[in-house]
Image (tube, rainbow, N blue to C red):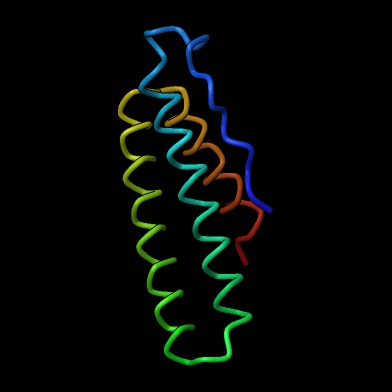
Amino acid sequence: MLSDIPKNLSKVPKSEIDMEIARVGMIAELDAVNLYEQLAAMADSKALKAILLDIAKEEKTHMGEFQALLLQKDKEQERELEKGKKEVEEKTQK
């Protein structure tokens, strides 16, 4: 399933537009990862499967680039991401 990415960013305040664009970019990259990994799972050809998985890996890098930009702009997002990471670590420690 692919996301319904917002097409009209005209209502986003100018002070938040870069953050919103970064978020839209992240959504698009995650959609691409999901698509390529699903296609790889269906592919018969080992070569095609390998290429699709390689492309999916590149999309993960792109997602990380958008995330890094977002975290530079949105300090609340940065704090909440860190809180989420700590919660997972606490709940999954053995």
